[in-house]
Length: 204
Length: 77
Image: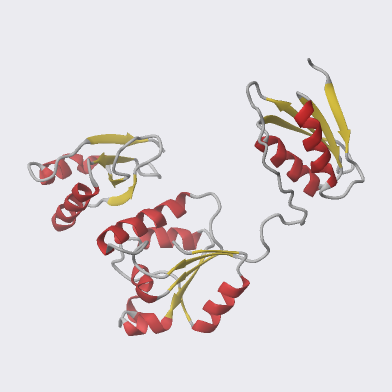
């Protein structure tokens, strides 16, 4: 039962290490995978987690890692294909952008939408992975001015390095430019440029 | 002085109760924040009001006979 299958994936390039590891863990309770680069390490770790394994990593010298995958009792493992990310940076390369296009979340009922957008921004503050940039336009800019009920959240995000771009045309339209209390006044060029470069763009 | 304020949350049966309570608290100038119901607490409505415990009695008094409160829970962290 306690036989450990060893997969030596040193010298192999992505996605070979994760493919071999996957084959091994599908037929063995315990697998030791030896890799020699960070991408393979991350991919095999993710595979292990996804397959419902205990994942333990031991660092050897010269950038070599031993990853021990142990199938947890009852974990059947997923049948779906695991997609290995072969880039050095697994996430998309551009910035993570959130677009706040209104002072509401969703369409239909504005009173409810205003409840939801506040809950959304509160929750974004609690997320480990923060956006790189948040863009505010149309009635979304109303959230960034004095007396906004989400100012505290926006300032917190800003203090944690999130860039807040606020549409100047929109502030001007609502005649609240002088009340801006979080973020920096921006323009369509920067907004379009940021959106175009984004690796991930989220519109609540 | 604690650096991180401790909070409690007030739970309601429905979103409409939260909104009604919020209007009253705003009018009374009692500080609060509308937040999603924390994951470890179950509630049908999903939204609740967070506040600092020292003003709990004032909040309860303001809402008395106006909005039914379902529960008040201390928030860890």
